[in-house]
Image (cartoon, rainbow, N blue to C red; front, side, top):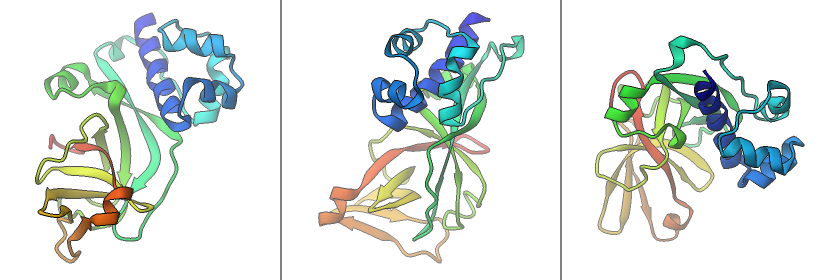
Length: 205
């Protein structure tokens, strides 16, 4: 029971550290002592009352320990949405936790600590994804492989696109052919960020 609860806490804390940059910044922002934050990140389970300020700050909730969750990893879902064209909805608060079977995560070589969920915004990736679909993104998988789908930032826009290498840079391609290819070259490469590869929505990708 304790191990399950600790894994949930670590998943939420990892999302908080990612949001604020460091464990120290997260402790400062939440009002939790640096020593408590350090203990929790090292695997010591906190008391519920002590962790509440962090949970409130991140907009997260913890699923209470239950036997049915022993075989599951809990992946945080953030409120950011990956869109098309100029569509963009930002926000990195944790909306909740999604449960994935550990055997699935292991088989697909996805580490729960490096995974995050977010929703699709727009129709640029239809028929692969539709607006409102929820994606599982592996943040550790950022090496571009032709034809794979990634969540990226170009300029100030968060997008989900198939990516191909080109002679002078990269090509971002929508599955919906009404949208033209986006060529990322020269100075644009300086603002281009790969956040991770999409691995799941309703089936393995």
